[in-house]
Structures are given as C-alpha cells and as structure tokens.
Image (tube, rainbow, N blue to C red; front, side):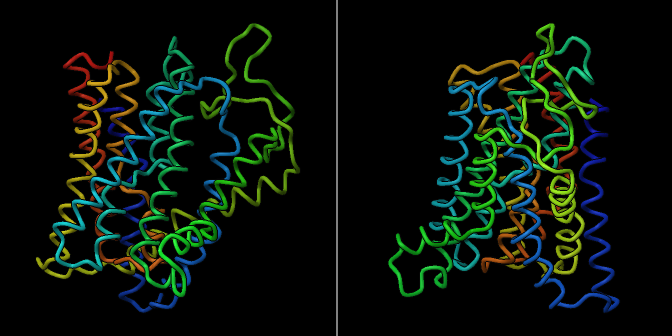
Length: 356
C-alpha cells in the first residue's frame, strides 16, 4: 500500500508544485492574465490533442477487448455525467457555474495519473507472474474512456455556452461545437492512425507476442503492438507537444488560483471535490458489484473513478467559458488528496478481499 501511495504522490505532487510556482510567478508579475489566457489556448488547441492522439493511436483496440467490461465503464461514465449534470441544474443557484461544477466532478486524470498506477499494480515488469492481459485491459479502458470523457464534456460546454450555438439551434450548435473541438479532432485522428496500424515511433516493426507466445513489454511496462512506423522526428515532435500539458497548464492553474473566501463558489469547489474523490468511486464499485464484477476488474473500475480531476478538464473550462476558479481549485484539492484516498480504497479492497 505504501508503494502505491508513493507512486501516486510522485505523480501528483509535481502538479501541485507547478501550480504553486504559477501562483508565485503571478504574484511577482512575471506572468500576466494575458499569458494565462494564451497559455490555456496553447494547451487546449495543441498540447492536449497531441497527448490524446499519442495515447489512442497506440492502444490495441483488437487484443484484450472485453465488450462487457468496456461497455460498463463507458455507460457508467455517461450515466454519472448525466446524473451529476441533472443534480447541478436542479440544485445550483449559480447557473453560470453548472458546467464547471459538473466538469470538475466527473473528469478523471486518465492520461497522466492512471498509466503509472496501473503499471505498478498490474504490469509484469513490476509484478513477477502478473497476468499481462489485466494490465493491457486497464490501459485499453483508459484509451476508450478518454474518448467518452472529452465527448461528454464537449456536449456540456456546448449546451451552457451560448456563443457556441450563436445563430444556430441547440442541436446544431452542439454538433458544431463538438466537431470543431480540437480534442475531439485529436481523438478521431488517433483512431484513424490506430485502425491503419500506423504509429509514430522509431522502433522496428514488432508484434504484441514474441516467438514463444508471450506478451512483449517495453522498458516502461507498456505492451508492444504490431506497428507501421513513421519518421523519428514526427514522434519526437508529438512527444514534445504532449509534454507541454502538465507544466504549462499547471502554471496557468496556479496563476488563476485565488481564495474567494467561504462563498457560494467555494461551496461548489468542496462539493465537486467530494463527488470526485468519494462519491464517484464508491458509487461505481457498488453498481459494478451489482453487475457481477469482482477481482481485478472491480479494482480497475474503482481506480478509474477515484483518480483526481484531469488537467484537461480545467483547460476546457478556461477555454470554453467555464469558471476557472472552480476548475483550478478542484484540480488542486483532488491532486493533493487523491494519493491518500486512493491508498485508502486500495487498502479496503485488500481487507475486504475484493482484490488479491
């Protein structure tokens, strides 16, 4: 359990430190509101699509595909999103904060926190004798849920942002907003590359299985799939752009952080954080058990829902007209405390026998 906590801390603490750096730079006048605005644009329109593309185009959508498991996770994400949205619309007095509250409450850090945690827990590189199919299934789930996560968020902001449907009906406005969303474009291009078998890597062509029928892993514990390779410079460019997400986004988060006191918006921050760290994972486990999931499947489901808020969720709020105070605050809180809440849930899973 301590090892899992350390991995989560090592993954999330840099986010917190970079945000604190952003606060310091803003206070000293080294970055301005214009820098933050333009920085969010760079992350949203270039860096995040590059990250999503990189994650999806290398995922194996044929091997280790469990339709029942993938279908449950996808439908749960959609239904929880809808339920949280209805709750917010019915009970929140500040309707302008609905999209930011919902977006912060259900969006998990699938592309940053999940992969190293799953590698530690399920990859044979870190666990001798571990079933490689479990790790492959968890990474495949992350890739597919990324698509649904961004698609539902695009609908959310299209509905609550009048500018996105200016001069159009609600339905047409939503379709236009989704179609031109750079993240959605990154998903689509990634899927095209995936189905064509292309990957941006300089390695030689390799298959998922070696001559003995064993799954092949790289130095980072990732499953190696059959690929058609592109030039090294293309891979390096995509990796460099994707690497902008964490440092630039979190510095912008820190620049936007400001304590507003215990007002209505702070109440929304606390409620959204509680939903993300406790209600979403607990509810997902209860529902999953009712559908017969257990063991490693149930553990994967819990982790997918107990992750901290995604950096991309904050960036979407900043770029599409959401409340940046709510997004930045929830991101900081969930990143800081998720190491402890995730460790607690994993400990309980051990004690209760849900995961061995």
